[in-house]
Length: 266
Image 1: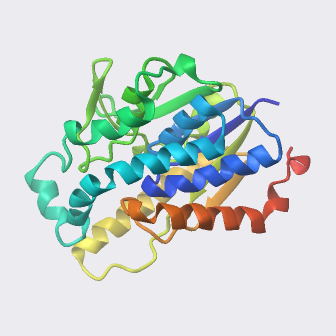
Image 2: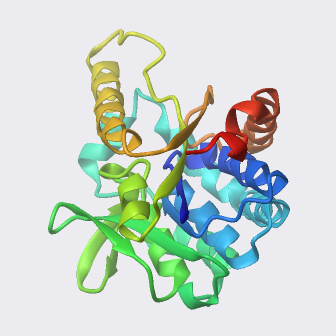
Image 3: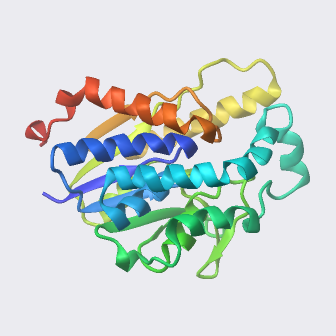
């Protein structure tokens, strides 16, 4: 059996994926293939390099702590009353030079070939309108592109095409894990259903966009052999909540450990 691990997009919610990695380590399960979109790409890249969930948490949390102050000045603009205004008036909120240092701090000049596991990073090709699976080259380029939330981060050019967040069409990249050869895929993802009914037209746009993501995700989740869902009551950009998210995910995993026992996999 060739095991694939598909890590979903979700911003700071990606810290929950580290609990999934810890679960697999506890059962001495080593994934053969790891695919990731957006925050899932960050965790996939770090685990590919270090093969240790504790190291992934250390690296990811250190980067957040180091760059959180500069990130928060942009995050404050993301309330729903202003999002529409800046989204119309400018191409992106954060220029490349402001968020590249975060990814450089995490991945430096490491390449896919430096990874202990086969890694697939998913981006969205703005020109073709399709998802793009990247498996070679420098990790920092592919992962930064995969995590470039449309409208928030400036798109990146890779191999002659403009790339943005892999979660646009592949919020949880199960199909990509299968395409790389996995025949048993574990999906680590989040409940994405909107919590509140919209109160105005601006909220309605967010509400409908959330349901679009849910419908797209279901297509891939139907192909997964096992799905681990996390309930994270925070927005993707609330990076100051990363500790709470990680601890909540660990608690969820520990409470349901028997459900994910490899003895019952088929």
